[in-house]
Structure formats: C-alpha cells, structure tokens
Length: 386
Ligand SMILES: *Cc1c(COP(=O)(O)O)cnc(C)c1O
Image 1 (cartoon, helix red, strand yellow):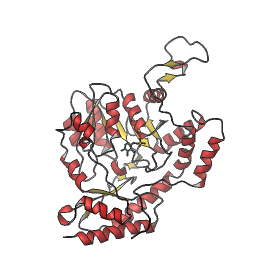
Image 2 (tube, protein in one colour):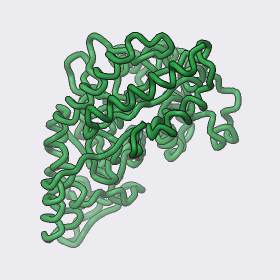
Image 3 (tube, rainbow, N blue to C red):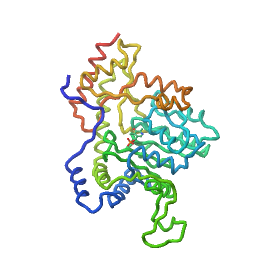
Image 4 (tube, rainbow, N blue to C red):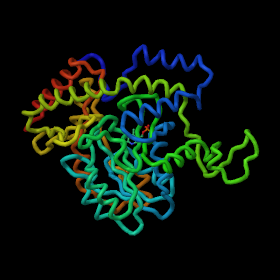
C-alpha cells in the first residue's frame, strides 16, 4: 500500500508560473489590466474561436453564457444529469427551467435522441457537457439545434484541448464555457472562460462580467458627457478575473498540450492494465474524437462482485487511492427534489451513477502512482470476485 494519499486530480505549478504571478504583483495592475486581454487572446487562439472572455470561475462562465443566450423566465434548457450542478444551476440563475435528458451508456454523454424527446415550444437552448473530456455528438446536437432554432452552450469544463472530428472544442457552437479550477486541465486558482465566434454575444458577455456597465461609446444610449462617463445597460455582476490569475493562466496555457499528452498516456496505461479485468468497464475511446481525459471513469460489474460500490470505494480510500464519484444525477439533489424534479427519471444516468468510480488522473502523476492505482484495483477486484 502507498504511504501518501493520491488525490483524483491536482494542479501542476512550476517556478515559471510563480514568477509570472509575482511579476503582476509588482506591476501597476492587479485587475482590469493587460494580462486579461492577453490571456483571452491566447486562449481564443488555442481553441480556434474568434472571441474569449475570461471570468471569475467556470460557474460564472455558464451564468454569463446563459445570460448572453437570452435565457429568461419561462424558457427551458436541456442538459444532462451527469454533470456538476453548475451546468443546470446557471439556467436557474436566469429564471429558466433546466430539463434533464438521459445519457448514452457508452459515452456517458447526453443522448441526442433523448434531447429530441424533451424539446417543447418553450425550449430555448441545449447545454451539452463533454463529460470526462469525451466530446458529445456535436454534429447531431447542432442539427437538432438548427431544426428547432435553439442556442447551444457547450460546458467544456472537462474539455480543454479535446478534439471533435479534428476540431478543438471551443469554436463549434454559439458559446463554450471552461473552468480553471485546480483539478481542471490548466488552473488560475479560480477562473473560467467563455468562447464564441459571435461579436454580438461577445459584447453581451463583456457587459455581464462587469455590472452591465460599458465605457464603449458605440454602445451608449444617451449623450456622451465626458471622459468620466459610462453607462449601465444591463443588470450584470462583478464576475471579473484578476490580472494575477490571468498571468497564471497564460503561463499554464503554454503547458496545456504537455499536460494533455500526459493525461492521455495515463489513460492508456489504465486501459491496458484493465483490459483483462472482466468486472470493470473501461471508458470508450471514440474513433473520430480525442478525449482530454479530465476523468478516467470505470464502472463496476457489481453482479459479479461481493462488495458494493461504496465498499469498493472505501477499500481504495483505505489504500490511499483517492477515487471519486462523478456525478450524483443533478435532479437527485434535495434542492431539485424540493423544486419540482421528483418525477424525473433518467434510468441510464441512475444506472451509471450506481456503478461509477473516477480514478486518479492528473499530469503530475508518476508512473509509480499509476502503478499503485492499478495494483490496488487488481487486489480489491481479486479479493471481491464471486
Ligand atoms: C468544474 C465544473 C464547473 C464549474 O466550474 P468552477 O470553476 O468550479 O465554477 C462546471 N461544469 C462542470 C462540468 C465542471 O466540472
């Protein structure tokens, strides 16, 4: 058994990241300075989008995207239950109604045919989530959106650097959101980004990030009164990111491809090691996509095991292997149950949730760390086989 606890995800910071932050601390701007625009430009370039807006966190990114998409009271937005609560909460922030469409049991992503079944005259948008970094079926989702005139907001918190049919996630839909929490691909401590190809949506995102206030004379509605003058045009928030964080983001972004390569190596090592394990289902690798491997999720064949998922989880934790569970179907949370979601049933999502386990995966893991996870898994599988 390993001596130190191995978490499921963790940041990787080097001296140059720290230097980049210190440089900003010694400069004139801690916030609203030049590093933010620089980070936005580099990120837009990295994902191949026309515009990027850096923001306080990934949840604020989703909130801003829903605002820019015009989600309001009476609107329905279709999303997946197998996601972090923020994907659905952002719809509620705008007064809209999240509607849950079940997942496919091969990719664990939202099922396009289930989306179709949930569309009503009130549906305004779809929020697909590239779960674990595995791209959703975007061609089919775009087709559905076109047919019904819906906006698509991709939650790409897991998908920095993921590829869908040769294209980086971040330029395929109306809006795409990212998170830079320390367990995600690159980190700014807290932070997020929204990318879009639409200038109009870009302007809305900028307003929303800073109180709905503009200093852009082209957007002003009243007579310009002097160089102190600004106008509040919308009800926005203070969702700004600092230059300190943007500098860290810029430094991290330079390493994004290296981090990604290591995540893919670790995933390959796991898949190789578990190929012959009859009681584990390893993640699918789609031929025409490259996952960014934010998570490596296995499912247990509990019918063949003597222990429960909880038992299996606890054995691994005892071995200092920080497995995790992603996610409790969002509508199962007490808040959703109390607010009209008791009747929701997504059988695939529930079945998935009962059996899933996320293994540690992050670029700084050593081959020995990977080996420790594999050894512990094999031992526990052996001990608990029927
Ligand atoms: C992390 C995450 C978010 C929220 O990002 P924060 O930066 O933590 O606010 C949203 N959606 C998904 C799927 C996530 O994993």
